Length: 235
Image (cartoon, rainbow, N blue to C red):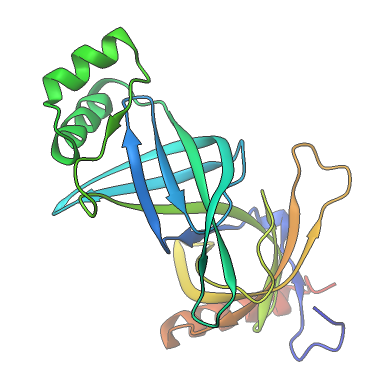
């Protein structure tokens, strides 16, 4: 993001503001267990990163969190512009799926596989990570999201810190959580992406341009930036 910017930028690290990147393009669940899920997805998932997962089957949905334990290229497809898009396979281990959540997950497994929820519990008791293949394509949908930290903000875009890189020029649905529990939704264009030196675990500074932001959300953003400007927090 070059220095000849149209909008004044504000450093906001001290506010602890964060947001969410939604990845829900093309995801196919291959198999599932009480311990985790394996899937195919059209973007690389970062090993060690925790994602929020929403799995749907018909009118039923379950929300869990999980960390990527492996990820590899498993094929390619041709994009709308004739470009070659890599397809990845990945394994995600569920985090803190206990008690009622485990029961809910077992019932979900029953809906999307040929196993009953009692069988899922019994077999997983013998081997917690025993995988149950999805019985029919389209029976389950998986939404992925990843959180980021906000570093700089302007009316036209922002600088964020993310756990992994994003492809330049990609356009991704995103959310930004402002103080006062105000959530702003928009499409973000990836304008720049740089690895943060000496970060452990690795982090990336990513420049985002705001696109397709609803009028009410744009007004909320302007109001917040006006308060920042009034308080003199611009660099």
